[in-house]
Image: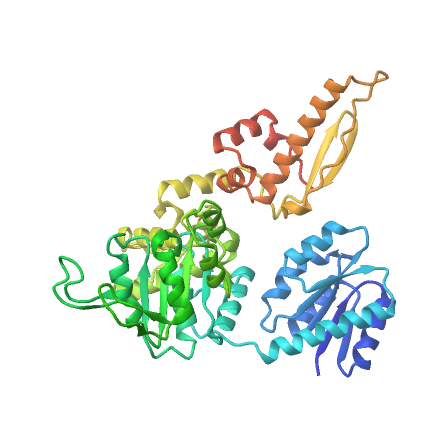
Length: 493
């Protein structure tokens, strides 16, 4: 029997959904406020939550993140007004199962509840757990990837892992192998980016004695060594084009011929490939075979950059600093909140690898410190933290007040870019209607200013992230902020 929670300030909807749940032989409970509903969600283990957007004490979408962090993560169905298309889009992007538009009939509510409960049942019946303790994090993006890796481990199909440099592609590849039926057999790594092009065929397929000038004895290739286990092709986008056809044949037939050999040999391996390149773009450029790409895409896991899972930075930092202490045989060093806060203001273009490199520098250079403080960080991180402290913070600055003459206008600024709404331009209060050119220039000025204010809120005052998001250089971004006097114009409620 599943448990259903309804958080909606309309008692009719709450009672209707509870009745539907009970008619389907499940239990249901309703709450009329966000506070009451979240208290119930923390106390009980619900399978499904129907969540209204507009509630007397808050926006239901703000609770999505916490609901998805609960141990027994429930499926969330958003209840939203028909006209609120932005809310529906944000709900799905934030991980909601689906949404219902108000007003809805009892039949629509019944159908949606049947579907989500059936999905939940099937999901729990085939929801494997990933036993791999080196992947650290509890953010929604990383948990989604862990669930995907767990499902991939239960299959025998090839896996393609996508992600920027330093996001942990090899770690996930190893996790898939370690949780698969091949775990007791070899995990063979091939770094396609570092193998000399003239040797890659020999390294992969092996060679017979005398196959070429320096082949003084036979050599067993990595494909043969992976027999029964997993072959991990790291940076598969760097695999030479002339070799891709031969490798595709190996994937299809599971046979290969060593360089200089005359017999076909067999190898039963599972392929896991990874790349930070856009393989579709390489196909369009004629540098990667489309048929090989199709073979690689049987199961795809896309790892998020660290900036998209910033909530994991504290956990990652504590984990790695403790690991360093163990590795160096030293006592753990206390870590200040200010130190961790400073780490979260940086955009981490090198992702988790860069974070760990910085922490190792800090640990080795300050091994006698009683507590790690921001002063122990590299200068670039301290600068980022200082810049962030001088600009508005998204969590405390929810409303922008614009004073125009004796009039005041409040503009709510959402945290998500898709939630930012720029109001229609208002012409100057004069009897003479402005010419189109003047109107356009003033409208663009106002739109530019509101965009920049919303951008800073969305990026939590991280200037590197703001520049990347907007497509501007950091210097240009600062110039525009100065032009519009952004800091001085924020009057906070």
